[in-house]
Image 1 (cartoon, rainbow, N blue to C red):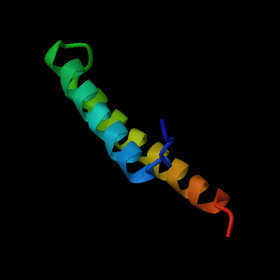
Image 2 (cartoon, helix red, strand yellow):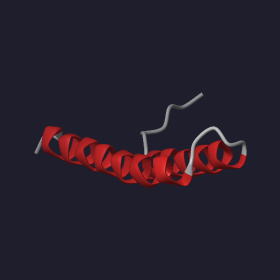
Image 3 (cartoon, helix red, strand yellow):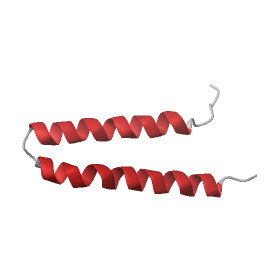
Length: 61
């Protein structure tokens, strides 16, 4: 079996999709309120952005 290189774009969009589904499920089952998601959504995107920048800066030329 051959190993394939990791595709960062697929990983990022997969994690983003999982976060959206988790937020929807938490809202549907009254685990969190809309106000909580209004804070958690941008925080998750900021963390993902910082992680993306860190991975870009870590890349070897």
